[in-house]
Figure 1 (cartoon, rainbow, N blue to C red):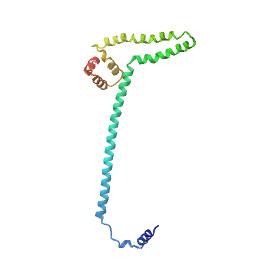
Figure 2: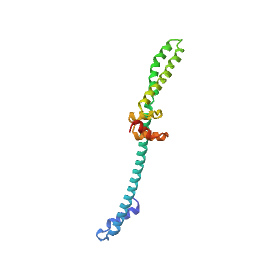
Figure 3: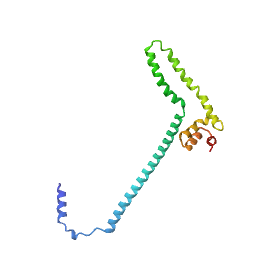
Figure 4: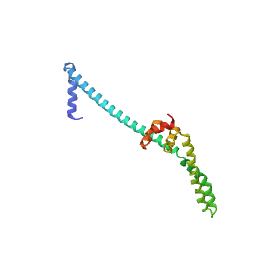
Length: 176
């Protein structure tokens, strides 16, 4: 402790508090009210800002979620992706056989030839789909598949309008 601090503490110890005048209550109350008011205003503004940022983040998450649903539906509607994942599994045994034989490099191009063959039968399978739908609109087939998979109709209509197609035609195809 410094000399000043010891002198102040000695003076306070010698003071008779019953003879000291009381603090002004109105002034004290005004200070407390001002303190409470400014802190409440600060906390309200902070809460408002945080809530706004959370709402913006939630909107962004909803957009990402909708985009993911559309992307998953779009990927699941592509039959080539499903067949390509199956064909490498079938090619793997052939590759092991070709490594055991030295004359096997010639059959490898033949093993890749069936892959286009699997792609060629797909257009005939699309023809019955267009026959099943009342009007023939092949560009809307993938959107019909999206609805059948479970993608919300409004999300599919939004995707249709983004690609420049008429959402009312989808309603006509679905019979709604």
